[in-house]
Length: 171
Figure 1 (cartoon, rainbow, N blue to C red):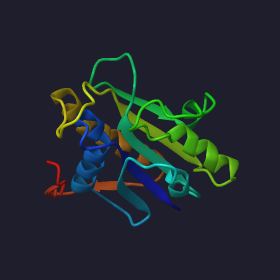
Figure 2 (figure 1 turned 30 degrees about the vertical axis):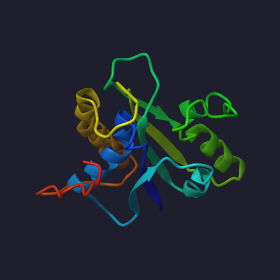
Figure 3 (figure 1 turned 90 degrees about the horizontal axis):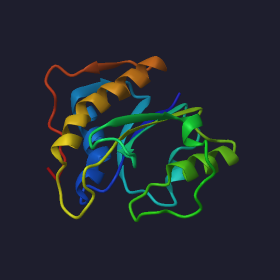
Figure 4 (figure 1 turned 135 degrees about the vertical axis):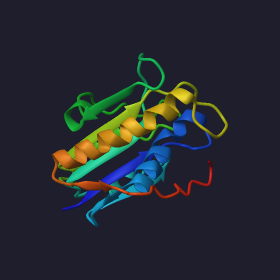
């Protein structure tokens, strides 16, 4: 059994750093078994499909484009992510290509059995470090949602008695 929780985004683009910040907070506050991998992937490129091959469960943490208020959390399962055909080209320089990676892995017959995107609507994506207050407030609820998704698939986590430092160089 292989499970991955990947934080996606560029920490040098303000709210786009949500994914890496959230995965770091999750890692600092929760302990999971060896079969659960927590990774800040940053802004993966064409190598993303290779990182999701043969997973039983895949959870992405990333910002999402939606008409909701900044800080709003949105959850999409694999079916929703694959609902539309891949766009063919990325619309922005920091877009991770989640849909394309899932399509590619599935075409190879090695896609993740289950996938979830836990996204947060950004307030601002521009050069700089740090998160807007709206997106910062969304990190803990997003982490709790990850824990719920993992538990629903049989992967229990335990909260750390004393959360560790995130070790994030950009904070």
